[in-house]
Length: 251
Length: 52
Image (cartoon, rainbow over all chains, first blue to last red; front, side, top):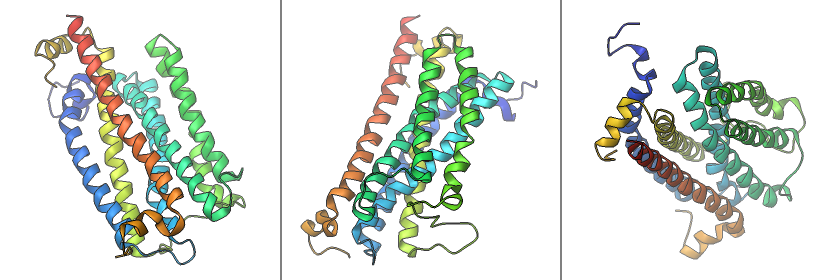
């Protein structure tokens, strides 16, 4: 491979990625905080009270972004785990592992806020319909992936076993997405779709999209920080880490 | 403006428990997770310098 520093795969080297991620992380924090302040302001002070649900609907501004991000994060985790497995790409496997806790966190937040939304609007915290059940399985897939990779001491074998589970489990994401179409569910259908106008007021939509972008910026910031930690843990004995440590824990 | 007073804002039209119950848990997780990630990074740096 060429040694040109501008090639695409330059940042596939953990040492390069470590520096890049460190430089980007503060900006993702700034964006996450700024967008969530604006998004929550619009969501709580500009968007009107819903005619049928009253103010209970305002849970949407955390519920839907968390659910969206958790599902896309799962696909990203499975993708990078698969790349790491197929091409023996160390960094890809590390990124997959770094994504898992954040994905599980967002899945839990979406489940929790969903229960707190279901109680006042449906009269129940939980129901075993197709959407809720398949989405609960997403949480178990995340936790199963984390438990599996942490249980295997050999790093490479753990990454490969995790990749297998992550890839098989990826079938669940389209099932979650289409569950409200394929089955009769208490959970409502899609509010936003690529083929039809959104079925909600534009201020509500704006707040929801801003909160989604805020959650993305948050996810990038946390996953990059965790990836940097994993890189150091695994490359402890590499020269560049020793140099970094000698410089006095500056980063 | 949707609210005439702070009390009205916190009451959320009678849905305060549900709205704030959702956001409180989300906020708690999203404050704790970054702290854990930063601590893990810091621990890894210390371990690397200890291995020196």
